[in-house]
Length: 577
Image: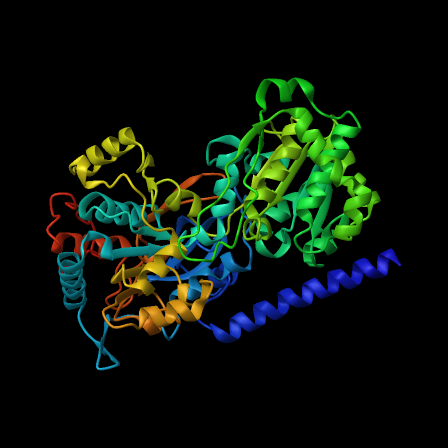
């Protein structure tokens, strides 16, 4: 039975891979896998292989891109990368295909009488700058905004923050990572006081057990998952899939445990209950490093305008925490979660064993949870009670989905309250930013304005009149979407969208700017373990496409900020506009 099941799984996986490769070859006949491309080169020919981080998720794999006659034609994993060690997933291997789609945006488009008309990049940038000037003059600095993403490169985010917060003086800067990583960030801050991960990828090489909390790594982070599988072959580690549904990760795991949606919170508390009951608390660690707090519980309904929390966190002691957990015995939680008390105790046995190193891994399953901050906090509680944290192989690790949510959004200040170093509310942080930006410190407003959802509400209300959207598709991703789509179309609103392909968001734009993609420009990304990786421009951008960084720089100069935006390009890609 075991042999036939294994062979069937192997057969299905091989067929899936073959189907994907066949489909790719059919759709993109000019793009081949690296080894096939090299085999088909004429004698004496060769590819110019250049190094870059992959741009399609937050793992940060290193890739080598094969360039032939000014075109990216092949991709392979970089064997020198400590992240992926020469491996790539299907997205990495096909990454250069996305550059050459037939519907790439190649020229700026301006909406006139309800229809898009091609124009030059110079005219489009002139129009954007003009609209920003008149909007600020008529409605004040907080009437303009910019909305980016965790796909912004670090330079993109830096110049966006510098222009809007430092020069214009508005904190109307946000990114789509607010929608996916806010729970992770708030979980870090409330548990540790700092938005930094407790581990790194190297922990994979030391852990004995991997607990995957609602994380389909086999499909979403396949290269990292392959490292888990490699460790199982080498050292016999255990992989436990704890999720709401059966996935390919479940099939590959040593044990799959299915829970009712939302009830992972109760299961996490049950694990803590059992750890205390069995005497598995690392008392020395807890006494030296932990304090106990009762968190915010009166959550209300966060999608309402101008929502605010009604309660405040308060300090408690260990005994009060222990008493709180009395409602979460495995037997009680079994009835709520659908997870048997036996399976809960199975998980506890690994967390509680001082001789087992445990790595907890999660991503959007927890971070886009309706109580995402809470579940982050609760998994941290498990590691803190047992002292299994911040040492090789013992770490709770929140992965991310976008290539630079950790490098751009978090590190160069593309959220309303953030600065490249610190927060707008802190005077010393404002002084530091003003110095490096070469602006008066008074320019930087000490009060945050709108988080992402509130920013779109402000657009609907008319508090914001101008919005520049780069590298993201909010007309698909926003909650209560009809409200914000209608808001973008209201009289007196002006929407600029920078992208590489048409999307539902470009459909509502007044100006569409064609963006250079990935290796058509230079940049940096920061991945889940906060590894910053640089990549160079390898090929010329299509048509009049321009990097998001230089779009912002050119508009900044037109707004009169030449002193702050003195940057010059060194290669042919920099056009005179």
